[in-house]
Image 1: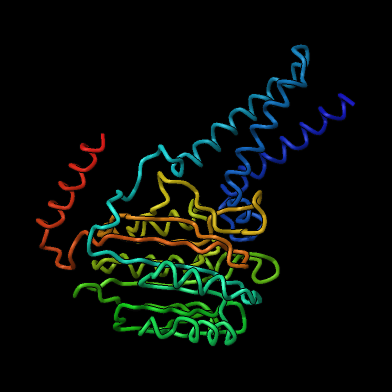
Image 2: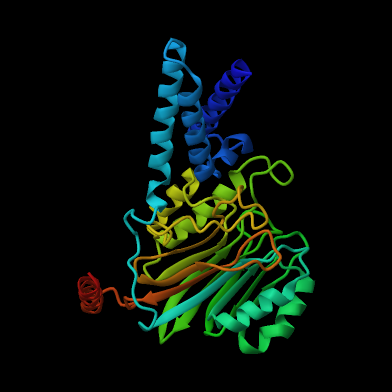
Length: 350
């Protein structure tokens, strides 16, 4: 029995080390990309195997020393990977009180096209009273239900319903200007680009939902990565306040998302606050963050939370952002004033 446990530890430990290092190979085939997703799960699994190794192997088994050292090294590597999302890590976006104005509230939800429990979503929209509601995987059935349920409360609509799980509905209480629907990579996968008018200021919003790198849809991540990076290039050239939101079918820490953030200059509100894993809603063990809101440095975070179950395989995400800087790049005095107020609030709380 002991020998079987030792063999099992060697096998599982070796597999874990392999899948931890596999994403370092910059290949777009799904078998390389998919192991970027379960970062927290790999950390916990590796720790369990390390503990099991110490409890199982004896001091005379010299070969086990090297194996345990590899597991410990992998533990440090995985810790380095998850650290930016732990609550005590450095935040990319500072927090401000929820009453700070002007602010914008966003509710993002992948509803799951075949889900028919639309009443939960309708109640959530009614309760949160978000300024922007972005719904993904919406077909004609979902469009009719949502328009009837809360369409009157949202004067501005962008309705791109599809029957291929890539439909997209955008509801807004704020005026939408210069709205365009793109099909950047594939003709049947829409993305939305629009300006949101908030207190006579303009905020650029990109809503995207690229296809995932899975064998059932596309075995390579090329199309997904291309759309994400294309949006990153567009936001890089735009100096106005910018938000990119949607189900990216990619985790916040992947190589592609990291590159997107470097190219675009956008910030991740998850950093220093937690994983906020939104998928899979039905499997608590296999869960990671796929639904994102990235924003430019014009914003401060007022609230972020993962919402309750709506019958989908995704949890909705809610964010409230304070627009701390005006569209006028020469108006630095207002931003400095906001920063001084924020610093004073931090000192008073301390």
